[in-house]
Image (cartoon, rainbow over all chains, first blue to last red):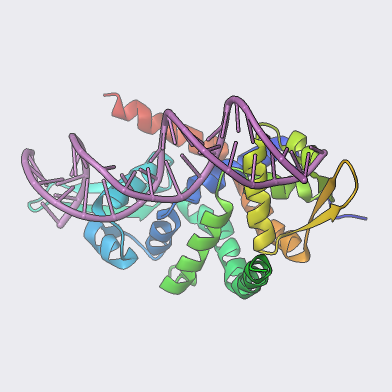
Length: 123
Length: 123
DNA sequence: CCGCATCCGCAGCGATACTG
DNA sequence: CAGTATCGCTGCGGATGCGG
């Protein structure tokens, strides 16, 4: 008997949506760094590495909008802005970390499959 | 003391890669449908719904390349091609389904957060 | 220090038409 | 039936410059 995961169309759409939401270039990296506690804008920028100002702002706005992070502005000069994961953000991290663990364990297998495929295509 | 998920930079990159791989528009939908057993090209096309033949081909080629599905051609006329999940593909489905379950349970919270955010922005 | 505005290249995706 | 080829649109993401 097959495992028959609960995949009705409706659920698949939900998975698809959330994966596209989280599957952009920077979101998980930012959320991951924020997993260890609140951080300031440039601190986060340095921690992630390679992200442009624009994309960090965009990413953070999106996360804030969806309720995954909070944004706290200290009206000092120079200004200071802290970002922190909400409860929802932390909870999201759980299944994402599971997928990450899977990725870590299986990248070798995927790379091997790729080499086989690309080798066969070169015939 | 904080939970401190195991998020070194290297792991985060791995998560990011796999999420981008799987986070495109159709991949999870196709893999989901294939989760119940092997399917033919147009059968899959109908089951997924709304996907163009070009994107289905592209998606399937990518999945085949990465070792998630097998492609079996029957040299009959008219031609018949079956696609089926590999073991690796089935294993991938496990953490993806977990994320999907999370998505299903929390879409309401996300939508609420969005409404709050968008409402506040309209001030 | 933080972030918005603008411009631009490029890849993802769709629509359509054509082959074995 | 199962693809390939081509075109056009759109949005992501990078670079740069300005503003509070």
